[in-house]
Image: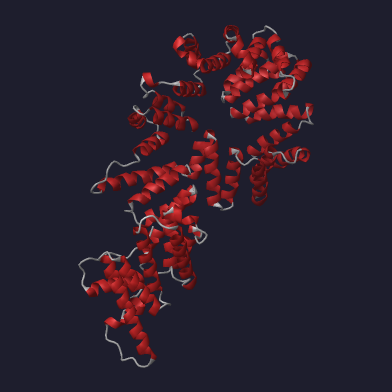
Length: 612
């Protein structure tokens, strides 16, 4: 934002001069000629006369500017600089007038821009304690991206921070500080540094509660860092301020407010506000997708129903089915998908409906239905390994043997997953392999009850094969019964003591529960001794160290884990906890915000930490 001299039409010369002095910092150095002063002699007289002449030239320059004659204004300012080259006021006004003349002269020449920046940079070097020059360059670079292309340009963040540092000790500098922080926030925003932007705009809002657009940008910044409660408050304040303006127009945050209100409090009235999107198919689908990403599945379904029937495209059905699957509405999905498969008008979406008809039927444990779908659509199913696997597992679980499973394994001898499955079948038979893979499908939907029921259909609890025990243990963890999980892990430690994965997982779950921490640490360190670069094992160790109160060690270990796998939400969550405990709040918030972007399952749990 370019700093300009204040237009003061109609003021008397004395008031005009006083305003100019206040703006340019003359009050202390130049105000004495207005009051009675002792007679000066010798060199002091000469200095005093120069000051008066320079002041007169600057007043003339401003007067010419008011009349629209920038060439004359620049000439007066140049003469003032010639007479007093060490006057920051004269240099500053010359730069302002020079920039204004450049901008009014049509398209800027590259040489003119470079020359101006060089002059401004020289002024910063000559007057390092004057805030106006770094503020001017910083604001210019933020407002006009074209200026940043020149080598003479400096980092706007450093410039604005330098100006802020110089301004903060000054009295009556609040308005200028507001501009500096606003421009700093805009710079952070342009670089997608939303956490930094939110702090800058929040400062402006707190300092000037009536700064309308600071609330808008603060809301945007907080929303982009997942601090959605704070974002909503800023958006609502922005709406109120806009409505109080003479010509407010329509506040551009209606959708943001409606979305966040429904996100935080999915009451029927709040969701109904989103019906405004009914005529905008693309935007409505995008909003529904945002709800899906944070696992507000029921709200996503309500939003999708605002879409007119004739506008219900592939994306509508894909998201609608996905939400119902996540909610466990397998019967609904099965019926809808099976019906759509028989509808010739939905032929272009056949793949979508076949995929979910197979999965929903499998999760309903309707093995015969899965096999019927396989026979009716054999070519399509066998062309997709994931679908073919569902059919093969259903055949085993229905008691029809494993010919499809053997066909699938033989179809790709280079596939490690299938090769391992073949070895397991040769050792254990097909049934435990089918049950374990079936459990994986239930657990992928976080349906631990369905996973446990599948096991119970084939094996009594007291006679589980070792092959299934870890999956069952994990299911007990998910269902909130860690003691039963630990019993299974204890038996696995006897029968499979050399399995590094079992050692790590048992150690992690013990540590997460806060039980037997020294043993948990030893188990994980044992696993790490064999796989020192395993990021999951490092995460386990770091989390156990945190539980033991070893915060410095925990931070170092978790940072090492994230270097290996930087986009893992669980690791980011753990590091955030450690950083918060160490008083590194901003870093913790950054970790949690990133984790929320990566994993919707973490969103609301972390929201209460990030933005309570």
